[in-house]
Length: 260
Image (tube, rainbow, N blue to C red; front, top):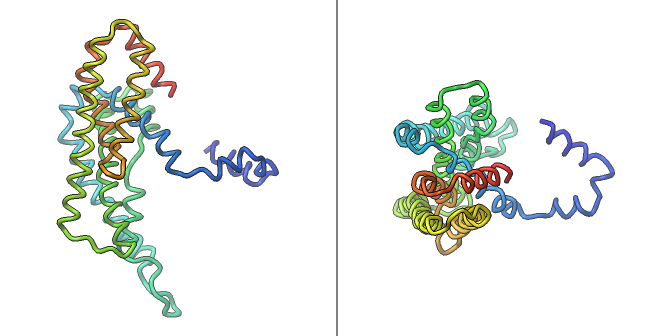
């Protein structure tokens, strides 16, 4: 709320015309996404309890795939019928939004970001099982939302994809990211095993590999899910890498990632 208020005041004040703010305003949103998504996703996955995540995996998948699909559908129905974006107005002009556009909107707002919720649950002393379920669902539902978004975006742009194309896109996004994440996770864990008590080097490796996984997955020739790739990388390193980290190294990595 405070950040929103400060942003609104800056926009309305003469400071809005400060050159630095004008440069920031002109930045491509994809640059912001590529800077902040890798540390946010990797840190959550790396901090997750692998044992509890494995135990709660069925519930997490249920919430992240079918339940998210239901949320997208209900949002689209609410937009189309409830708010009547799908009906012509009194003058008989066409509907404001089509079904495809309503579903596209639903896919954008249905993916949850429970960072504040998880932090509050931890402060309240909620069970780790509940916290892991909510956090795990938030990590995986982005992949589902992204598949729906990309398919509906092409329909909105006038492209009618065949079912084979939709299936291929889903497989590439859902499986390509995790495969790439596992490959780089194995490389990172193997590398960490060969390093002994070098916290700075180990922390730098986790940062570089996490960005590398995201960029490789999102490359135009790969087009896999960078988010799912990061989730897989974080969970793989959490399960196989943590036992090989010295206490000093682990503390340094956790401190650096928390700061980022």
